[in-house]
Length: 91
Image 1 (cartoon, rainbow, N blue to C red):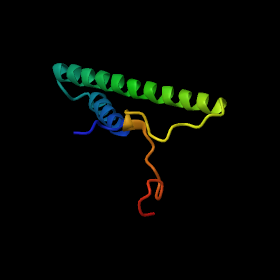
Image 2: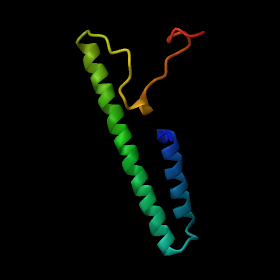
Image 3: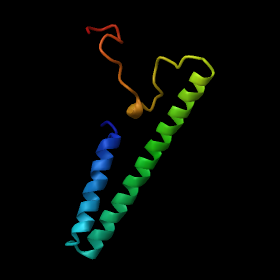
Image 4: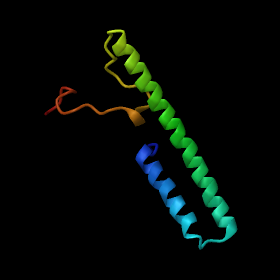
């Protein structure tokens, strides 16, 4: 199963926030929802850190006048898909 996207994780976090803001759940459930939200925040932070590192690497490559590589890093979550015709397939 594919890892959830950044946007999917943000939506899950927003759902947890709405649940807590409603305030109509038992304390033990509220704590569990809060813990789920904290775990989502950590996942999102890791994804943002990885994206920032990629941008810094690209900026460095452009500043040095070198071209960036054709293939994305193994962490495809943040990879930009090729446009029509970029892969030699039908446009």
